Image (spheres, rainbow, N blue to C red):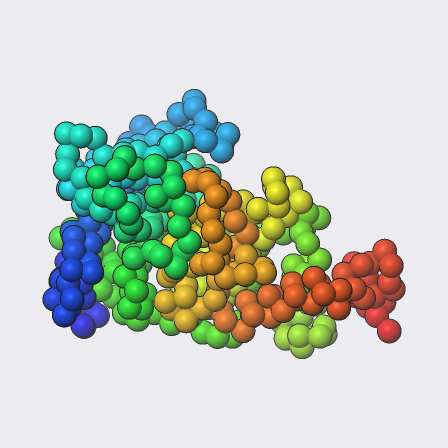
Length: 364
Ligand code: AFP
């Protein structure tokens, strides 16, 4: 398919509906077109900025105890309205809804499940910074007539049938995978079409760029401290090259940069979060982003295992996330294994060894 000439609908019809075994994907293209419609509406709302009257707090908190902004609530509603009616979904889960949203009985019910974060990076709204939406699609298994429950959504990432995000930046893009590579579509605003502009995105295996919220350093585990310290040591350290660092506070923006030019994104386990699960949510942040990254040749881990293999226990479960360029992510995984095996003690126990993380020059 040609970049710049293929609309999202054409792409989905060709990729899903015209395949030899369309049953495997029945309705998926129509569902994704509804998701895209929600994204276009959100994009139009965000473009109005403060003029929309939608800035500021909604004076409520979400299930994580975080303050909801008016736009968190409004964008959640947009997703629900665009996707509940089409007879393709059985239920939805969102960062902004405490429990499973079962499709009301006024609409026909389908076999797909949609999990989404309607407005990722919402702290960037008030500064007119980049934000996004993230979504993941599962196919419901078992008795389709039974009431939908939380358990229907608690499936590992490798069972996703589609995933994507929208990035609302200078242009709005939809980046999508249905399991045959990761592809980017740019919104042609005056026409209202998403047009394929970035087909088969590949993440370079090597990179000199990492992204982490360094203000949390004191809460990180030793393998992450080791990795970041080595990057910061640059040319004069053991990596013998300089690295650059970025932090946009919007996972969508970080992952988009990595898909465009490589890099590593880390929101690792830390001692600040309950059970050291990190900050990001498994079902509607970590899993869909892992799908896109893996489909683009990158790697996505918790530090110790592939994110795709994490068995979810709760709808709003958090997970540590380290993803991006293959060789760097694999290096970080090796650091975790070495630490767990006790093989990197000299690096990670500054209290017990001269070779301190804080005084790397002290190494002998
Ligand atoms: P929201 O979805 O609540 O806006 O959170 C955004 C996010 O989960 C993720 O997109 C960022 O990587 C991360 O939070 C930024 O967190 P801090 O900069 O506050 O550590």
